[in-house]
Length: 204
Image 1 (cartoon, helix red, strand yellow):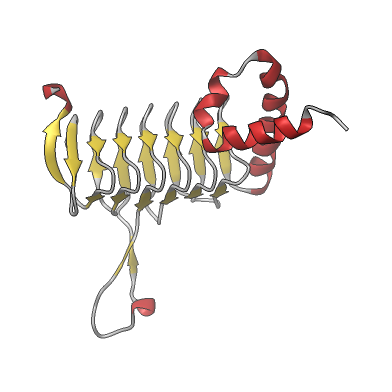
Image 2: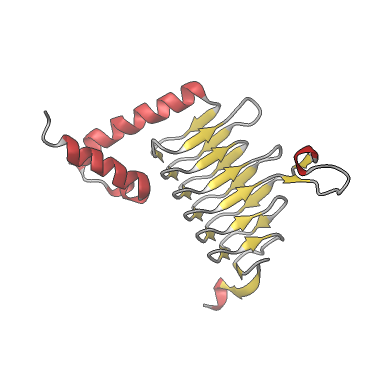
């Protein structure tokens, strides 16, 4: 038995939950990590409608689903951590990170996320909504979708939620646990339920 195997398997777990470590691996670890990632990504592209650019990392326990017309596109250097859920249509720019247990569903109109944006653990981003008419059961309500746009260099804090139809401007920050129901301006800092402006990054 390869004496390094238990350590390698543990290292795969570490990378899956902290995928930013993948991009600074030592050469001796990169020698096995890159083929491991190629296998994971090749399989996903064979069985789902997914495009994956170069230098991405995808945890084996991430669940990514795309269909024709509802594909998932990952730009260069993206990272998808353990137990994340992505259902297209979703388009990620370069170096976007989706951390552990985040949940993104593009509905009909899709989710677009700009370069360098960071999505923290447990974030929920759903680009669809259900009707609330009292004349029918919830399960029978119509579903609508407007789409969600998140700009470049945005930080979405842990366990935040973003509802359908929202646009978040470049360089904005969403505080941990916030629920964003209206647009956020560039450089804005928002927090609370529902989220409100609580600052501007340019004032820091």
